Amino acid sequence: MIISIFLVSLQPNLLFVLKLFKSMPKQKTNSGSKKRFKITGTGKIKRKHAFHSHILTKKSKKRKSILAGVTLVHPSDEKRIKSLLAL
Image (cartoon, rainbow, N blue to C red; front, side):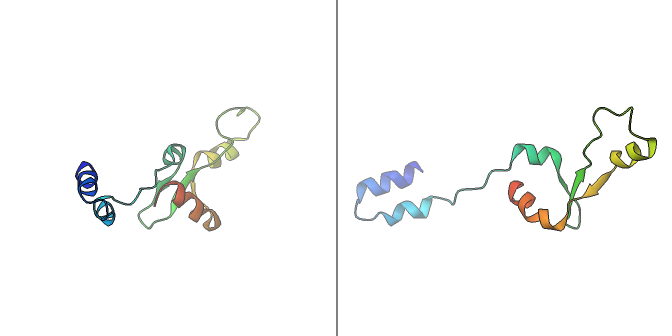
């Protein structure tokens, strides 16, 4: 970056020199999303079920067992989540 500013200051009419040294900005990964979602080997997105963190006494054993597992994100949400994960 310092090199490009130096070259532009020597030749102010050649502003395109700055573009040669400057890279495209990168999209940042959403820090909340990277903790909540994982990518499978086939490119699908895994997520945990909700409603399994507290108030478990009134929920049946079967329901808690199902909620403890992992499931895939719905295909209609995949594009949005992949943009949050910068994929």
